[in-house]
Image (cartoon, rainbow, N blue to C red; front, top):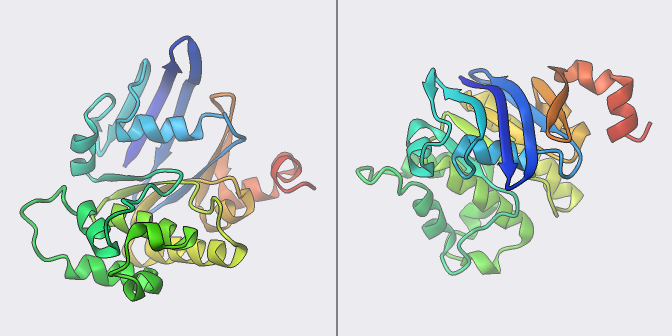
Length: 235
C-alpha cells in the first residue's frame, strides 16, 4: 500500500531524515518508534505532503505522491491526524467532523461515517453540540481522530495519539485504534512515544534514530528485543 524508499528530508541545512525506507501493507498497523527528534513526525509530514522530500520516493498504491499537494494526497486516501489535536475550537463537534468530510463535496450523507465514529468514541455523540474549546484534552483527541476518519481514508497517519492523556483515556484510545483496524481493515501508521502500547497493537514496527531506521520487524519480536526493552521499557 505505502512504500517509502531512501527518503531524505531537511529543514534548511539540518538533515532530519536520511535514507529512510519503510512500508505499510493493507490492513496493517505499523508503529514508528524513536526518541524525540528521531524523525517520526517528519516522516508523517513527508507522506501527507506537509514537507517536501529532498531525495527518495513515496508511493501509495503504486502512484508516486512525494511532493504532491496535501489536498491531492487526502483525496488519494491518506488522512493525517497530527500531534497536538488541533481541533477547530469555535466549531461544534459535529461541525469539526463535517469539516473532515469536506474533501468530498458531492457527498451529503455522513450517517455511516458518524455511526462508526460515535461507536468508537461514545463521548463525542454525547457532546456533539459542544464547541471544540469546551472539550477535555481526551475528547479533543477523539475528535481529531474522528475528523480524520470523515475523509474515508485507506491509510491513517496517527501522530502521538496518547500525548497528554490520562492513563484511562490512553487505554480507551488504543482500544479504539485496535477496534478500528480489526473491524474496518483500515491501515494505520502510528507514531507513539509509549512503545509498549504501540507494540501491543501493531503488527510490525520500525525504530528511528537520528533520522535513520535502526531496527525493524514484527512488533512482538521488537517488544522482546533486549535493546528495545532497555531503551523504552527501562529494563
